Image (cartoon, rainbow, N blue to C red; front, side, top):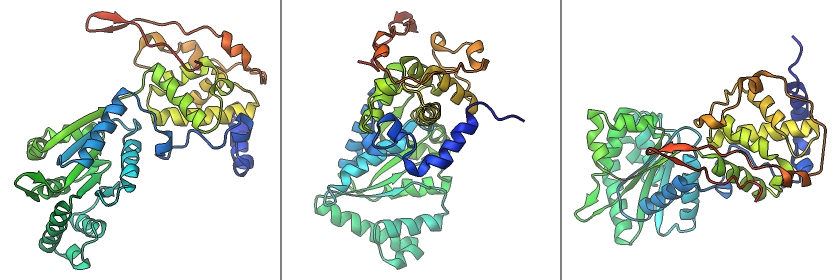
Length: 351
């Protein structure tokens, strides 16, 4: 079978140039802007993300008990958590926190994790009674000193029922007028479904703060992409065309993790073709390579079937970004909301 156009070149580029900076030098970047690691330095705050960040800060710096953070896979939950926890690291005398990012543990493993995380005695890991007594003494002492303590559980939708019950029982360690342990549950929407089950109703009743992340719209996607490029030292207008950014939004459906995957491979493709700014045709190649359907929620932005399946046109290398200033604004389509049409926010990638 003959190789798919573009795929072989990209694979060779990955192999030969990985240790030579890949595409960074070609696009004038100090670092790769679209890595998948949850780096707080690249945090972008859309409205829902800003609200969630405020809730997390409040839930971890006051005695609030349970905070629930929900969001589909790839919407930025872990990045928000790492951002807040990085802030708290600079205040070790105020908030002590323990993060569990792989919650598929047995009950005994969970008790061992708590003992190690809160620096309890080795013997407490072997006895639940001793662990609860030492943990209570630890929490009471910190509260008396004006300090807070938190347990943060990422990927909480994967917690077994028995561990969710253990977490609920930990909230019983309290005083008459305050909670001694804050707990953050972060997970995908399946977690909300589980909390609606009758056997977890007592846990749901203890949740005092709740926030939910969603996908980015087109203006937020453009700002997200441009912001990451600028943080990495690049100039967005010289790296991606307006049409490419619009297609990236359509293909990713506004999910930040998918945006990163698409953008990283789009820049690899642009580097392989030695072209900048990267055009829409390379975005369509990436979409086909990753078997993405390009079906956004807004029907006015959907790619046509002809665009999805036709071969990408040959792109001539160019280094002149000035022509982008004359690119027309994408057409705005009305969105029905509460029975009335709303205009889309301006697409400000090149402003």
